[in-house]
Length: 252
Image 1 (cartoon, rainbow, N blue to C red):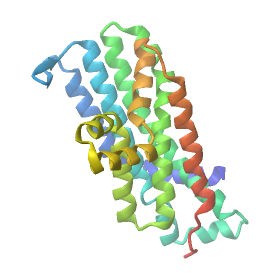
Image 2: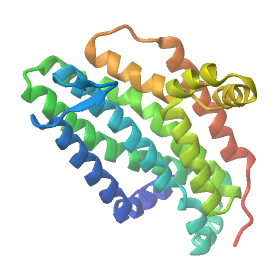
Image 3: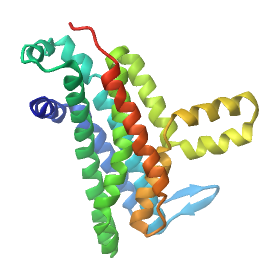
Image 4: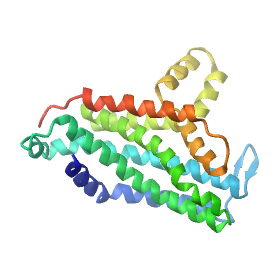
């Protein structure tokens, strides 16, 4: 499996989508860090280091989840289209290990991209005299990896049995619901009725990736961390990963 992961990682590194998304993420973060940049929420300007830091961290979470879908949507189908799977079968490697190795490579490649964004965020915090924040980036990054793993695994599993277009669409919707989990939770209470019930049902299925982002952010800012939410999200990773063992793909 190690060889599969290594080769798959090399292929992800050569994909231009990775560099494009990371470059856009860095550009947006640089715009946020600019002294001349400000945002408004309900007519109130979002300024100051702490507020801009939180905006940048939310941005990293969103970019990471989008990138997880982009890098995972075609990984497994492409291997079958190129008939690379036959090279694996002759070596006696099972389809489960093959799919598992490709899924792990998807997670690792997304992790490497998000790590770059965290470096940019660390430079921003240290340049603002917040060295203690910069030192907490590593454990916070490990919490953020939970979201990356959830989205990447979900997309990888869907790609085993679904067309690329459907996989990408569902993957983006899944990631979007997780990233905007808090807003959807609030919205369901506002609209009520059948729409509210449908959103409630959706939120039961989709992990709270907004909450996990906040836990990583809380760790850096020194706020209380919801360990239960982290454990529930880790359980979600386990449940989604079962799809690697359950779903099979017809050999090309």
